[in-house]
Image (cartoon, rainbow, N blue to C red):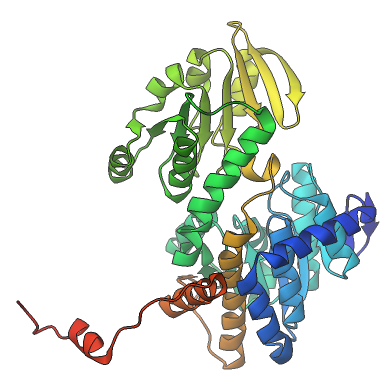
Length: 425
């Protein structure tokens, strides 16, 4: 472990050269971020601002971090999941002078220690994925909140937690719901999660998906993306849900809908994408087919009740990287991937750069917007803030341009017609 107090703690600085090559690859696939980097490298709108970040340390995140730095920010970073940090990327960032505390396979104590190190700088902006950084401020260092002008939150789980906190009047500063931007959750969550989760399953198992009963728990944006990609590879997709409208959508997409109690008996591969704990529990493990594969793509590892799986098992061994074989007392085997952590990040590389291009553009622009409010003396209420529609459309327009696509534009007459409430048949 390489450690320099107040600067970095990473697995091995010698990995930096490999990490830099991967970051450069991501840059070549993230034209929106690179355009924003070029634009704001001159004006440096984040100069004088200190950003504490807690987000998966991947090559795409590195592009965001270095863009924040180029725009003038002082940045301190930690990973937002114990198994998602890519050590070569962390090393490359440390070599480039980024204050970072992140390495793969952290335990819980190390995970929160890393977050706490980023707060030593006394940030005035936060950037989060899952809200662990934000909640660390609120629960352990509330005195820091008086100097924080705002934050941004990347994921569905984090936004849900923050909305609950805001409803309880417990939030100490405003947070922008980056996850809820159309250019984030309709792309990153659907196409990013779908492809990268399948990627993680295949890397950890090398199984054939065609013909398998593939159970997706949760048919939100992430579950929909996973179901889409599994079906595309020939799997028989089964969806479990608690929300009637989501279940109905799944049926109209051609998937079979049933309860987890029913699905547990016939599924070959299970993946949870709900953001809720105890989706797969002991009674499900007891009836699973011999050789069933279980994994999660939600933010936390509580969707699969691993302690109950351990209790039902008589032995456990690692058969492949990120693949543990549990032999149950009834003789059947269940294979748990990535220790129940996000399979797309722990067993693969996370979302492709092309979709993270838009998500991180929203993060970057939201940080600038918060700084602009501060410069103008505008004090925001401590609530969850939605991203404005014009930002969504601006990012989508730039993305289309970089892909070489053009779209139509409303004429003046069409705009008048759209807003003319008296127009009829």
